[in-house]
Length: 190
Image (cartoon, rainbow, N blue to C red; front, side, top):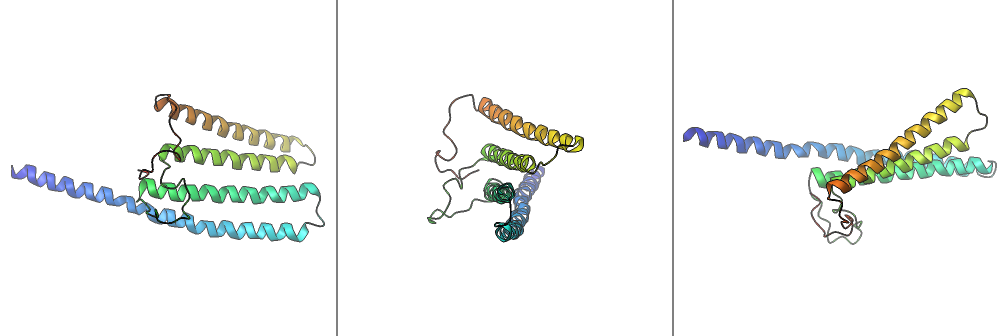
């Protein structure tokens, strides 16, 4: 009898430690939030560079500069999705229900939706990178052709992976038309 009581106490303590270990992820999300500052610095550098050469640049150079800004913006958006959704799914619920500035999707993205949003963002970033490469193409050399071929293959892999992940999530959900995560009831995101 005493052995079962001791074993149960040990189990409770171990489970408590395991449950508390989720807080070890918090510094990772804080680091990602700080990395947004680095991304902002790079964005501002690109923006100032684009503004400085706008009058002397060709149309395609301006478009390439704008695509760089779009790429950095998509990357920042991906970071925000990972930070908020990851923190709420794996560490702790953020309670900002009285904040009118809270994004509508916050607190409603579960892990499956997070994977899909991440892959969608990666596909968009990949597409922008691919478009930049094609737009900067001046002459086609065998090396450049091989590089572009691999960029297209990688992009297609991202697209196919996204479609397969969406299909597998739909099949796992029973194939029923479920409400999107943003329209579902405001759960705790866990």
